[in-house]
Image 1 (spheres, rainbow, N blue to C red):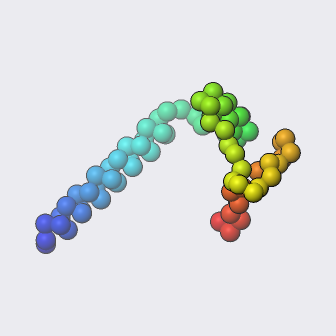
Image 2 (cartoon, rainbow, N blue to C red):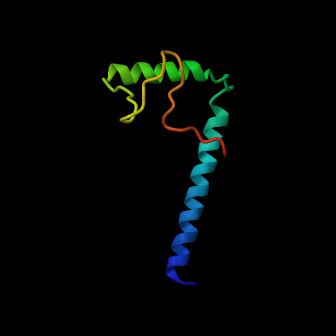
Length: 79
């Protein structure tokens, strides 16, 4: 067996062990909680605003009305 195959096998084994460890840590961390996506988005927007980062439309695209979803970037619907 070539050395590169042996290294690949060791790398795969290490990645699998890390995945198992991460899963075990997640299971032992306690019960899950419901995800409040709106609260998550609000927190992200707050952090961006605090950092002075503003989401701007690309040139030639009008800014949407307050509260309306931005038309950019286009959302993928084929997923």
